[in-house]
Image 1 (cartoon, rainbow, N blue to C red):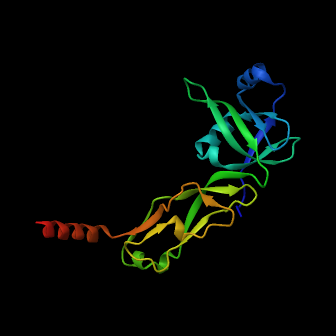
Image 2 (image 1 turned 30 degrees about the vertical axis):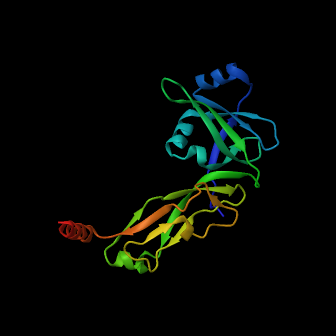
Image 3 (image 1 turned 90 degrees about the vertical axis):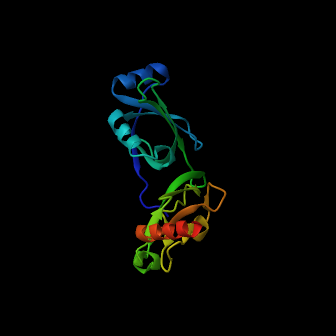
Length: 204
């Protein structure tokens, strides 16, 4: 299961329509709407600087949030769109969708590499080259893995770790339908350079 789902703070927006949205922007707020989940749409406002910080943190459109609004029950949401000013590129509106525990969504899950000290390739001077520090998975909203674990024990120089080598939690699947590379153990630069020279001499 996932660890702590990050909070997303918002305020109830009084009034709807363009007039209320313009008023929110004049007050240094970004208007938004929360919809879905079998409940009525809820107009909300986000503090401008707070939202900018969340956007700059990355993965805003693929992160599951715990939406906290005064006077409302906390609810899990995922952002479906961020509208931006066509000139300045600053956010002007946010659409959030409520999720039930049985809802399926795509999220980026971090990859953790363990047992580096017993990795043969690393002990012999190899380098762990991480191709995908995160993997996008299709998951149930109520059963999100905190991370994917790659066991490096016994891996040698030249070994490649693909998604099929990772035991995925039940109910999750990659969004890419092929056995893609997660990481590999590459040779030390000096050894790789020597191999290149040997190949060049053989060709000559």
